[in-house]
Image 1 (cartoon, helix red, strand yellow):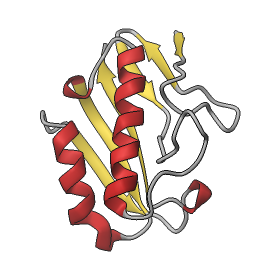
Image 2: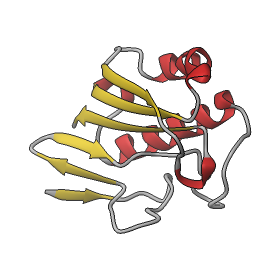
Image 3: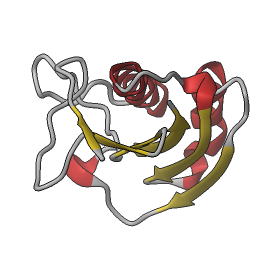
Image 4: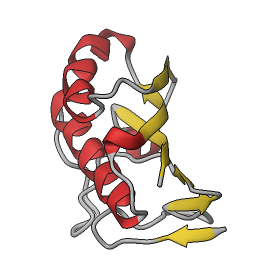
Length: 123
């Protein structure tokens, strides 16, 4: 196993790693719309927050030697399923290979953000 760390994605805010690599596969922790340089939440709309989440994921995947095009599975968490279509519009620009995906609405996300996404990708 190898731990992945990059300053281009938010530091872990708990007892976990940004991502781990095992047998040529990277597993990212869930990313929320935090600016890695400031630690502040980016945006107030689902589009703005989803864009930051995707940037964070892309940075993690790059640090692991992968990229969004090599994703095989994503898990998406939305605070409100009414944001589904708007979230998908941003998501589709990054995950053009259409990996397998689960998308669920949850009661609350860390820091009361609107979305969180985790990825499993080939390295």
